[in-house]
Length: 103
Image 1: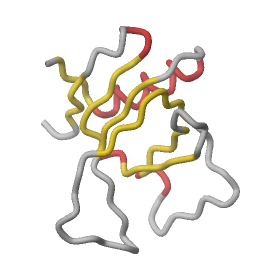
Image 2 (image 1 turned 180 degrees about the vertical axis):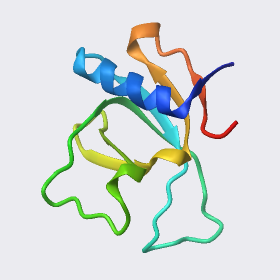
Image 3 (image 1 turned 135 degrees about the vertical axis):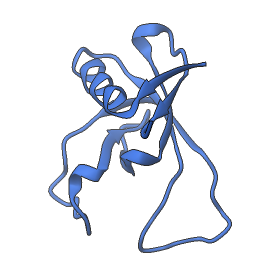
């Protein structure tokens, strides 16, 4: 399986979204407010695009730690950037890449 640096994955996702493409994203969900012990499962969203922050988006920590996207049904979603594990882009036939954050 191919790998991609986390910063490169985010930049490529933004570029693909601007060009009219989309991506598939897999990450581990985490909420600082409602932690659920023992219920950690990889979430996958298909046909996502990047989005701008919405007026109602409020973050307890700096917003740069979040990746903001729209899922396939155009619902606004967000996840911690460092919890993204896999990504695939429409520009390369949705070939899955493992995201590496720390080397």
